[in-house]
Image (cartoon, rainbow, N blue to C red; front, side, top):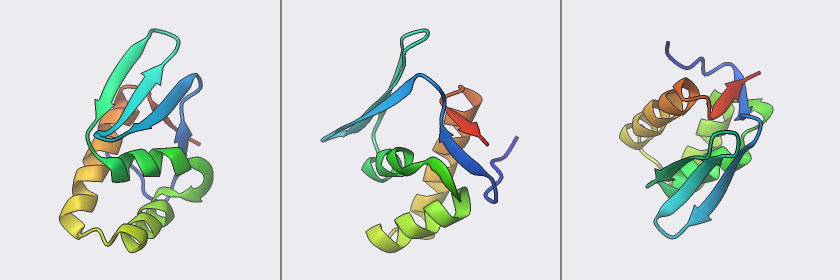
Length: 92
């Protein structure tokens, strides 16, 4: 199921993000799932997902701040879809 960009998202309960030089780590405390993220813009987006903005608003802000092109945004959206499927982010 594709992500709804008009929806609001946040990290799932008991999931934490740690920025690293290579991108970051995503850790789910319940089952100790650890994901390596190779995109610092994706990590920054995840850190800002607090449910106050729609995904479209968050992506637009990230693109403006980082000067991201459409191809980079598509890659981030695909990654977010996979993170939602794995239960790392939750739609509100």
